[in-house]
Amino acid sequence: MADKQPISQTIKSVAFAFLGVQSEKNRERDFTQGKFSHFVVIGLIAVILFILGLVSIVSMVLA
Image (tube, rainbow, N blue to C red; front, top):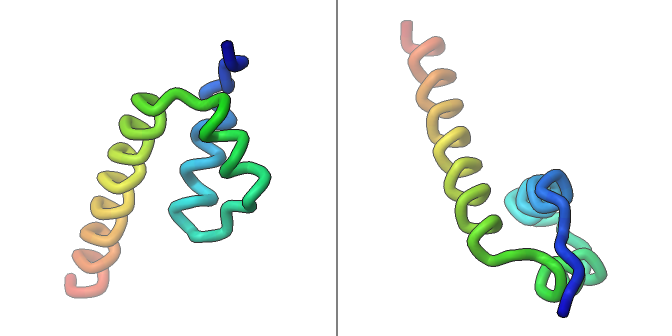
């Protein structure tokens, strides 16, 4: 049974993958120790925050 990956490490991995700078070593660790559902939920939250950030910036610039 694989060791459980802490949620803080999952958030960090999602952030680095979102930016496209995830290392091969960390990617392999994520696949062996991470839980898929955690990555999906954190990824969705990251996308929503990104979109809300873009909408906020555009609203400020156009105001």
